[in-house]
Image: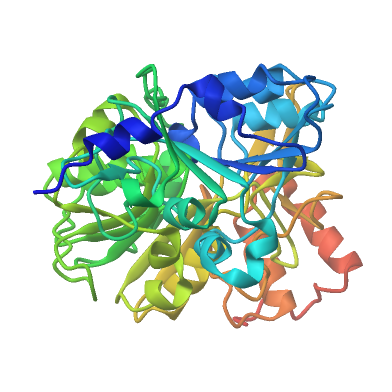
Length: 455
């Protein structure tokens, strides 16, 4: 059998040597979420101010440690950092102008990485943490499949940073890159892989919202859960329910999926494809979740176009998509990613699954949110507003919205008139805000004396 020891040795370089490969006017792509390179990032950060200029670095969901290219160059004389999806770290850096957002629908990431018509934005250098090379010469992308293989193949220079702590995530598809397809290897310092803390206990409002959604799920349904406490809560409630034979297809493999497996709720037997396997594009969770996905043949790591393409999502019967939102207006326009002009997260795969679930036979797309929030001064505000906050991005257009759920109920807005949408939303708003929302609807001419009709 062929061995790859000589090729491995020939391609092995230090992180500092790898950083020297970066030239001015380059585009650098980092691995997403917990596969962001650590040693290469530190080495590249050391080059701030050494003559390099106009180096664009793209990440997806920055996690600790804080990227050195941000810390080392606060005046951005050398580096400018971009994020496809904001985490808390990205938000804080964005508040002081050190990170900019790249908006997109997540399933498109694979297309951008592979399609030659986007050659102008392909990376000069791609670097991500991977598992150690196996006996077949393959490096597994671990927790960050997504669109990594396309980036690796179509970058001018492809570098893997090996970390023995990274879970091995079996495919699926596109879960690896071969030694013949990369240029350099960094034997990393095997730093700990970033893991999330356990989710806080849910509020009574969140539990009520979850109850409204769980009662809509049927045996054999295929479930997607978005990022955040609410989707995880719903997954844990599913684990405690009487549901059975559920399937999972989601961009993210989250902690609640482990609970669903351990409770015997997941068989994936009723899926249209990938029978008996859970399909996902990346994983972000606790260390226990990482141990669950490591080498687990019941799971399939796939590229994000495969998991998120709405037409593929719709092939599963009874597809259930569950995601968080930040606010919605009386026109039923949904914002899930900004607070005014401040970027909070990103579109991610939310719109992908909203569309896909609606087009699934028996499918339902739920957008969940508590009816109110408190600002820094403790003042209570409604998340249902006459109009979206100035500067807010529309994540889900009103034409695509299906179910909206608060602790006061759930409404299906599909095919409703503007009047019907306004009334339905006011009915699930916090009672303290309903009268002013009715007045606003009147002023907007989407409310009248005939408003209380079923459409």
